[in-house]
Length: 468
Ligand SMILES: Cc1cc2nc3c(=O)[nH]c(=O)nc-3n(C[C@H](O)[C@H](O)[C@H](O)COP(=O)(O)OP(=O)(O)OC[C@H]3O[C@@H](n4cnc5c(N)ncnc54)[C@H](O)[C@@H]3O)c2cc1C
Image (cartoon, rainbow, N blue to C red):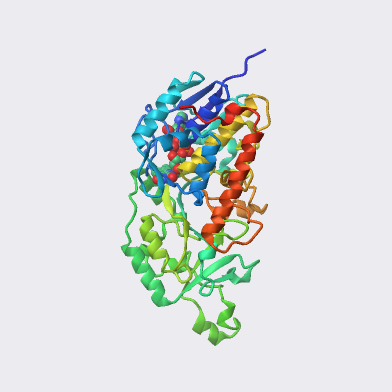
């Protein structure tokens, strides 16, 4: 009988390194293919694996914060990368930050010494053969040739090459005494939250945008930003003219707050009509997360918080994600992936990390853990696992694989990268008003689930933490 080809993992970033480790820990040989140092994306600088391309922080330590809970779940499940992050932690207040060079060096050395991991330093230009079990973990800056092949495999509409994302705020932090729910021209349900501005508020807001500090933009971003006319940053629209935003994403026409009185009364309409309106659109079915429509931005995060809180209704907004601008290759995962991270149309092919539309370092590790675990299970002819939505990892992966989106294709087309956050978790069976206590209860429920998962997994090698 023809021996089955070795498993492969493309990309030795955070997701790929974790995936390769989980596969090898299950006793299965794996090829880990990394293009550095022969080729490098504009954001990668070192030759080591699991390079942190920007900040050295994996986010909050505290398990009653979303990224803290995600990391705690990963710890319990035996994540290799989180174990090493803990080992090379540096003081950073409430966050898990690491000494990035020691962290990546140790990971590279440990993986390179593993007897079941074969390292190939090469750019992989094509997807592996369909008989082969493989994990794509080539990240948001996947090399061009591979990105083209992925696009050919998934279909041209199914793979984004996006350069911008708008901020997301928590629904319960929006002040509905100032904002109101409605759709433009009352079409369909009142699906949007609308934040009306008068002329003075609009002009003051624009003036702050014009003077705001921009985040550093690397050369490749500048180029792509000029190409994407359809998704210009809001500060760029502000620059183009006093009224440009009012004729674009802040268009007020067709939006009326019933509290202003009778829409049919012409005089009233003239007097009360908003000068500009910022719209927010639901990110999830329950309306816990809201995206500022058309607000892709390259402002520094501190500036975003300060300026966007000038919008009436958002004065106390809690930001789940800030707007970012960089090249970002991510799959239209809700259409393409199952919650096991297998491609629906090719079960032996899996994906992990930022390319699946999760956002952030810890989330990339989580995808790597699940895809690696499932690739190993497939190699052992076992059923791949999904994680329950009550865990942070499960909620995030279920979200990106479309399990929480409505079947409406229009909504699926709006897919944007998502970081871990409590808005993704199903409600508790009791109401807890205090946010911190509520998040604590989410955590307790999630960690109980993780205990059950650990027990249920039959192969102890898959979850055994790395030995010191
Ligand atoms: C500029 C930028 C800044 C970011 N800053 C942060 C931040 O501060 N904090 C945060 O939490 N998240 C940040 N992110 C988001 C995200 O968390 C990181 O991109 C994270 O590194 C994603 O992990 P990954 O494993 O999916 O991809 P990566 O870590 O990018 O790993 C992918 C690996 O695949 C390799 N590769 C690519 N193509 C090929 C190929 N064809 N063949 C072989 N190898 C290939 C790459 O060289 C790389 O080593 C940032 C993203 C970008 C683009």
